[in-house]
Length: 86
Image (cartoon, rainbow, N blue to C red; front, side, top):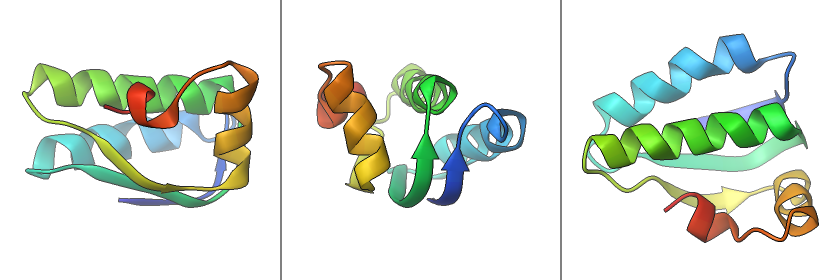
């Protein structure tokens, strides 16, 4: 699934069901975040929620690409994007 534009509190209600549906429908779910222009704590919560749902289903959520906005938030928090999305 490719997410474009903001991944912020303003789109959380829109993105949550789409992310969960993608995780549930795909055998090997992956999120392409390379076109994310803004990423805040709500975006982080959405990503962690999708990761948790994938784990619950016995799947691994991959994030093969992420924008600078996403990387900046993970760096600010001292988190590893691959570890957070594993």
